[in-house]
Length: 180
Image (cartoon, rainbow, N blue to C red; front, side, top):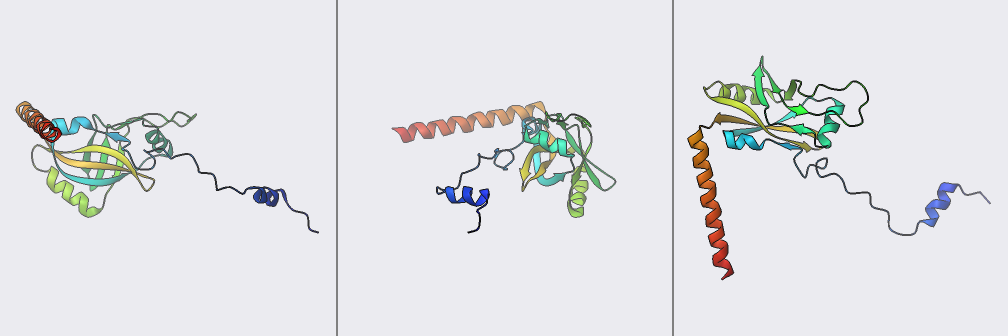
């Protein structure tokens, strides 16, 4: 009779359902944004939005998965037919021992030529700029959502705040009416 290998014996002993793996990180799974620029909607009117890939090093991707990305002071730029992401801060990866990346280096944005032409046309007008609004994962790749934006003045910010408060009060009134 042939002798059974240890693998065959272990496989024969398993009779229950297969073991489930640990739940995946919501950022890595694409269920939650890795970074958001919350100040963007406060300081700018956000017009058109574009999804762009970001050219990153491996340690930068791992840092983004750890939540070490910040878009607060970052902006986009189109130069020589290429789109760039400037001042986006991606912290150092915790387990990196050598060849540490620069935290605020200029990173290339990956867009189709037609999208770059649209961005050039829209940002040529006075007062318009390119603002990254969020970083997220899609199919294992880091994506950056860019918005063509026009700066708000102080009175615009106050008007936006008044509108937000009025909407909040209206929702509260409707909820009070439903509970009666």
